[in-house]
Picture 1: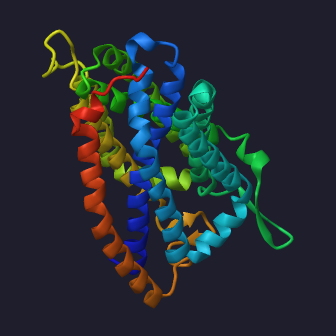
Picture 2 (picture 1 turned 30 degrees about the vertical axis):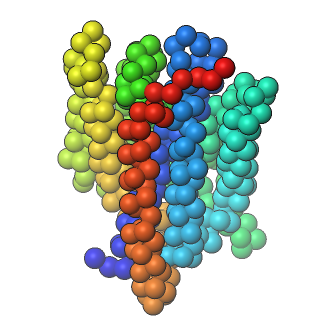
Amino acid sequence: MTNELIAITLIWGFIFIYAVMATMDFGAGFWSMVYINQEKTKATNIANRYLSPTWEVTNVFIVAIVVALVSFFPGATFLLGTVLLVPGSIILLLLAIRSAFLVFAHITKEYEKALTYISGITGIIIPALLISVLPITHGEFIEMKNGTPALNISRLLTRPHEYAFIGFAISSTLFLSSLLLADYSNVADENDAYRIYRRDALILGPISLLMALFIMLTMQREATWLYEKMMNYLPWLIGSVLMFFVAGIALFLPSTKHKEMRGRPRLAVVAIVIQYFLASYAYGKAHLPYMIYPDVTIQSGFTHPNTFRALFASYIVGFLILFPGFVYFWRLFMKDQRYVRQKNEG
């Protein structure tokens, strides 16, 4: 494996982890807003319990992605940074606003409801903006103006391919988060909240699958080069769809905790993560060697080999230090019954 492939694989890993964690995190904020007035179900309480310890950890990975891009692919970062200056600034602003409101929602109780609405709304807008970067890398949206690359926003906003990705981002955010919150509710023995989130997952799952198919249909017309290369990884895409049905079946299996309920949400969560892994692997491999089609490849945007080796060694050391902490955090977060089953105060 070449240095370029090692570097892009590392970044892809960061992106995949962040995509899964962030969609669950953003969606939890939205569900907290939606069910804020349904106190009997405790659905909002469950969402807030999930949000409280996870949003800080999730932001670690977006920092890692940006630093890795700048370090390993300065050529691609320059072009992306120039083109995405405005949308990127909007994303950072919304992330800052959301983070601030998540803090204030727990400290300033009299404004908790208003701040929860802000968190929920930004939790839907941010994924839609983040995923918009992908269609831009497919080509035809970057043009030179006076020797400077610029994003043709009007062309981007008139393409169905862009809206297919936005629809997929929103539906996936709500689907993954509802599935995770169903599992979390099941662990917490909050049966009413579990039924609500299981219902939401059953509704949003097929919608997410349809949006993924819509992406492929629009890709066939608007990014033919990528569509044709993705067909070379058709077995991975078929495996992804099969894992989706495994997750659906898991939600109808008899519960292992409550005989009167149905669903094994932990199995469904694992199956869906595998599903997204298979699909994202096929997309990432098909996208190579281009980072931004047709202007930047992983070879043309790569840093100096000596710089790569030093940076890669530092990333490995950092990962070895942080990974056990993340695993411990997740186990503590999902299995500490004192936290998972805590009740609302007041």
